[in-house]
Every structure is written in C-alpha cells, then in structure tokens.
Image 1 (cartoon, rainbow, N blue to C red):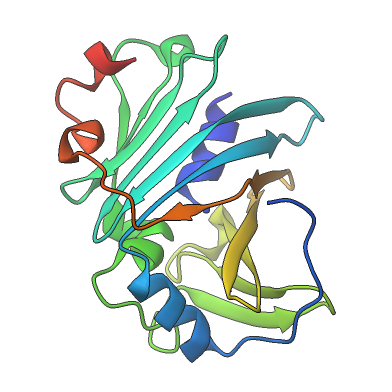
Image 2 (image 1 turned 90 degrees about the vertical axis):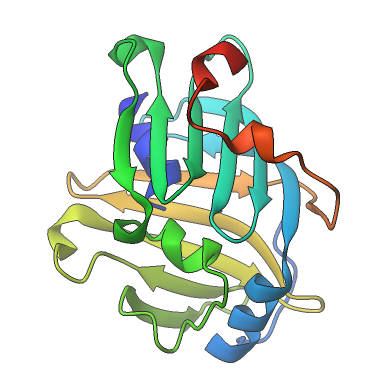
Length: 195
C-alpha cells in the first residue's frame, strides 16, 4: 500500500480516445487553467490489485486523494508539503516537500512544462500524449508518466515507474472542473480526524 500511495504522490476516464500529440505549451495552458478539479479513479498496482477513490485538486498547491473503504489511506498536498496517511504504516504521516515531487509541476500557480527541470520526456503513442517527469537530482527514484488526450485536452491517467521496476497505473474517471472546493479538505493539520 505504501508504494501505491507513493505512486500517487510521485506521480494525476474512460478509454483513451484518438488524439494528436499535444505540445508542452498546450498541456501547460490546460493545467494552468484548471483551478479546481474532482474525479474518481481506479488504481492498478504492480501486483494486479486494484483500489478506487476520489481525487480533488485546488490549484495552486492543493490536492487530496481519498481511497474508498476498506482502504483508510489519505494523501494530501497543501502548504508546500505532501503528507501520506496510512494506518498500516503507523499513526504519523510520511511527509515530503511538495517542490521535490512531480506534483509541484501540476500544482504550480503558472505551469510551464517547457521550463520544468523535472520533465524528461514528451511522447505520443497514437492515442495519448505522455509527459514523463522525474527528480533531476535523483533519476534513480523512478518517474511518472502523465497521459493526456486532446479535443478537448484532458488528463486521463498516470503511470508511476518506481526504482524497483514496478509500475502503478491510475486511471481517472470523468473529471469535473470549476466546482467550489472548501480549503479545509486540503488541510494537513487535523487530517486524522477527516479519515
């Protein structure tokens, strides 16, 4: 479960539709324009197990990933940090600086993928445009591949490839954008009482 949660940190529909390769500028504009978003997701772990949940984004800088029961995990990005709450790992959350994760690219006030030092790949497979990001100082940690379709531009899934050779895929359901989301759902302090 810990690796699955890290997949969501280090790494954000139905079947992918036909698309053309999107430029880094188009993907940057899409992410910058997305002020709030909410979507259900299915996570497929490297061992074939699946989890489901809901993703909430409030840019800049905030994200909440809730897992459906029986999972009790919660991932929060807020106030420059990412916290992973997993009862299986103990009562204290694991915390990471947001700026050291690929989430910092997605959650930035102004997204500019052409300037982001974490972006190391920009590919097209005939169906989706894939942006690959990794920590430039620690490429051995693995990478995240964000997949987008066009007409309209949309984030559809991501794949985390960790340092052990395992892959975790997160497939997003229909995304709702522009809804009002309360700031309190992203607060790291007091998150234990929200689970």
